[in-house]
Image 1 (tube, rainbow, N blue to C red):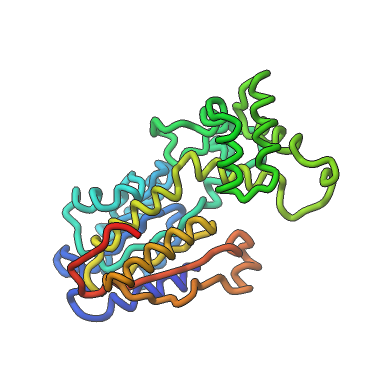
Image 2: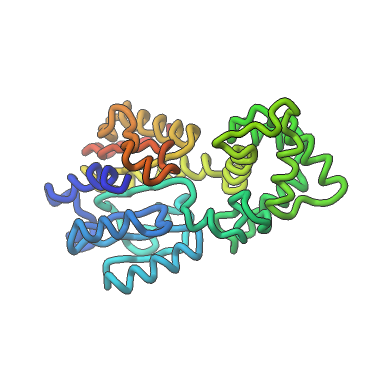
Length: 311
């Protein structure tokens, strides 16, 4: 939903000066989830002379941002940082009152295709799942090795909406007593062994391990807490009239965005640009099936100095 995101984010760019950042009048935007760089490049092409602060927790994404920076000299600032560090990161480089901030949540196709990261159930990569593999955060393998059975079940059910969560957790604990779950294939085997006998062999468009992998990735990276923290900073980082656009793929993420946007509206800090979340067209879904669950919401900061910190 690149075009839809820019349509919501960019009207602010062509209007009054207060919508510009403090950086000498230049239009400055923040891409909180650079990923493969599609949103940033589209924005640079659409707004000549603009600048994008490109954040990403993944060092490989930062390397791609550095490549784009060479293509667009002095217009891309790559920064290795999780978007939970949005406020401090912008302050550290002397940027405030940006024209717009965008988030494209979830994983990129490049991350899913990299077996070594452990995000996908294909292959037999290490069970890592950290967005930043250089961090000292616990990996998915470490989480599964130490968490209690009930904790694992709660994670899989709450983040993955997996009806067989307790059966899967029981199998994970049973198997780790014999040998630690170290690879994605170890986890897939545990999930498959937990499937009710009546459902085994049935064909489905959704792999039985999909929800479990999603849930563990969200737990390892504290996705919902991180998003809430980042959004609390975002409203103070945009100039009056600046805009914030978020694409989410998980109901929990969309709920965090919806509630935070509603809190800003009630406080008079922002106005909604999307009465209901925008969803991808059938054409986009056909060309990119992973986009089918995407929801796009956006707000514009009002001219209000009293900014609420949280929902």
